[in-house]
Length: 113
Length: 114
Image (cartoon, each protein chain N blue to C red):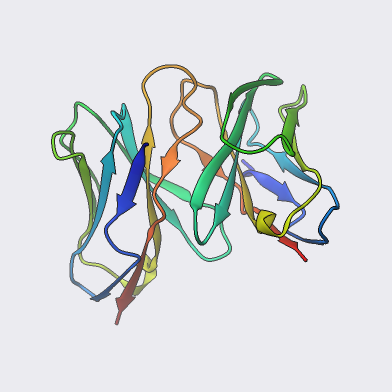
């Protein structure tokens, strides 16, 4: 069974641009969560989607948004990029909202110049 | 505010010894606690989960304890090997509702020297 797939692996953008990251969960997993990881703050929760609905949201500005498609694939978008948005963005999937164990992808390393 | 701390950023031990990592939390009543391993350039990988009503869990060379009175979890790797070198993250999960938003500690980087 294939794991969680995130694309692209690396991204370089400049301030003010926007970016879209993609995540394909493990087959059969309907919940997808997004996390931001930085050396200073560690892993911080962005949002979770289940059956195309956002179920939970972290404490991030509205520039961060996401969506989930009917095949459970998910995308997250960051608009008006700031230098502080440079981070590793991790996607995690699980079978459903009642299952605690998360399966993470390898992440997308975003650098904002 | 909720806070989760892992005792040290880095821990260096000799091969064959037992590594003990600490996770402390405040202002939180977790339903369960998880430990993950993260290698450079990779996402975290789930290792163990322990619930609030459990004291100890084991899996091969790994052991986790959970003390809700002390608000602390200890993670032990016995007979450590250089291949155990990685960053280990603890994460708290809450009661009820959506459980996707785990609260993660910043991790402890373990280095096992041959």
